[in-house]
Image 1 (cartoon, helix red, strand yellow):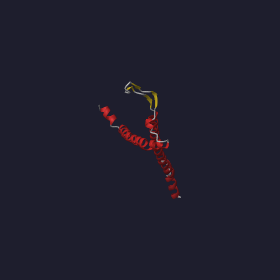
Image 2 (cartoon, one colour):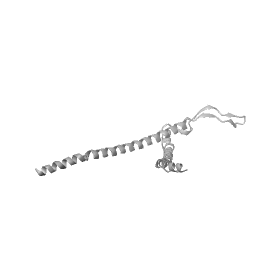
Image 3 (cartoon, helix red, strand yellow):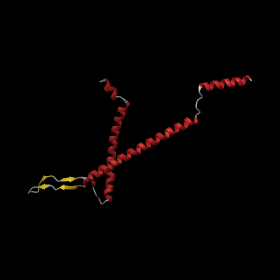
Image 4 (cartoon, helix red, strand yellow):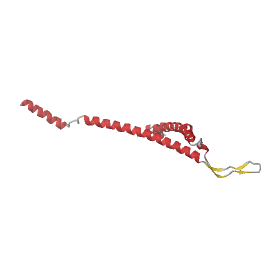
Length: 142
């Protein structure tokens, strides 16, 4: 039990849990963006097409003599697939842009640290400092 507690309370596990929760909420935002804003605009541009209803009928429904459906139609719902694919591509694009921004900020921070390290003179070794002190003392004696 102690081993599990140690594992569960590690910073990485908690960070991952927070990431999953935020990722889930972020996914809902992107799904709403796709479903409520982007796909209706694309559908309007293509002649008022609702992508979620696009499908190809593979087998027509079977009806009885009264016109009641005995067997449902078999359809290939490619419109929903298109919508989910656009959703995925937008999520991937957003994650790519966030990671790119983080990497750029990290590179700028590292470059700044390298420039500061290059600007600061390197500390002299102890033996060099000692030799310089001896030299200065000998100059004073002459």
